[in-house]
Image (spheres, one colour):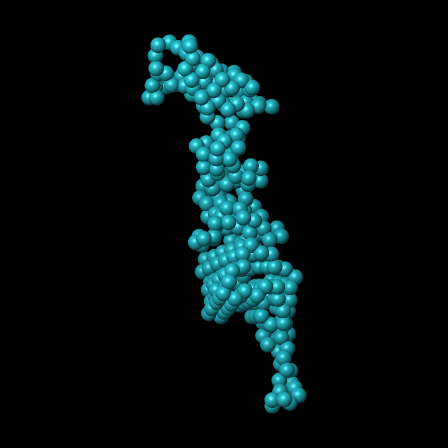
Length: 324
């Protein structure tokens, strides 16, 4: 077939349009680990149109559009004698054929068996293995989903029952596109792994509750939607978008850069950015409320002088994004 995996790992692969004469049209795995893969349009003459799994595990994969057929073989009555008859082996597992392995968090859907002989499992065939949190039909294990996964290609659509329906698997922290896993795909305030190779990215959910949607963070800002501050600096990703600093650079965030004493008071400086307006606030104690000192300080102004009045004061600089 396409991939032979023995005591090793296959991760973030697309395996399609392969064929094999016996076991595993797309992939043969013996005590291996297959994660975050899409396996489609493969075929086999016998068992495991998409994946043949002998031991090991298949995790967060999408296996669809594969097929298994019967396997014809010759029968001889004596060693060295010509074939006296031909027989057909059973067709097993159009999607996955699992012998003493495990399948978890995977979509195994819309696979087929094309056979004139015995047929076992259009999507899955299981012999001593286990299936958990898998979307397939008929149900073959625990916590399985047996309704249409609503795929668009190999990705989950917005109405997929596989969104946030998987189990946590230690070490699986990204999907096939290297996007973080899990996300809050169904926007219920709780992040949970999706079933399948792709983690669904919601246009409205905010997994890290920083004020930016997961879609905005991944598609526009290239920040991590599971971390309030992707770069680890004191400012959240959202606050950095308002301030105009780089949310992927830990050395760049909005702050007072200098506060120096002058002959008649203080000079406050900050890192100003275009299309922003700044205001200065003051308080006599950190336990007191801050009061507005001056505002409407537009870029490129990046400093403000404050006269001394004989009291100890604390200053705060605030930034607003100008309306376009």
